[in-house]
Image (tube, one colour):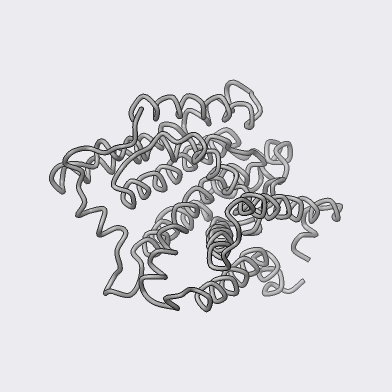
Length: 328
């Protein structure tokens, strides 16, 4: 196979997710009462970015052939934490933002240590840790609210528009892809993550740093989930320990990564594809409102989409004998 065909096949999932998102958003904008305006794009981008960050978090773990069921709870916990410490003067609030991200890193690192040294299945370990993170969120915010001096200036800037046109949330997504995902993907640890997901035994026999790869996959997952939680604080100016919301974002992040071409069996996919998968999945939800579908049927429809996304991602691997066939 020629090099360009291999690269095209490797990015097939990302390109399909991009095309799906563009088609769905074009339909959404055409049916929206306000049409295709900067305000409509900004609102959609801010909502889509929340799921996109959690989907990117899920991607790191799924690439290792695991599932992080605590991603939504880290998202909820850091939202509650952000509503407390992103307060005061701008320098103080920026330190608070750094504290939220550090908390996310710590949550992800804890997951990694439990999976690696506790030798537990990721799905079991992250269910348990997710309960801990939700407990912390509930302890911080037994009732929804925020700090009396929450810094709205930073929140408005991060959820506004650059030059009055481009949503800042999309700029933030682009920035974290450039600053974190691309360097990680090209690093030895990043390549080891893909190798572990493809065949952990083969990666071990090849002398790759398996433990380090898993640890950083879970740690970065916690970081990206905390970015989403911080953004939720920016959008709502508050924090809420909502168990249902955390569970919903966890499930939707799984659907988003599959829509974005990330294999649930590990070793295949990209966080960039997960972003487009998340934006497409969020747009599907917006379309339900535009077409005035009965609210009672909306969870049913989204559940069907989630089921189809997971089945589609699994069916692709059932049809092949060798994972390299995914790129043919």
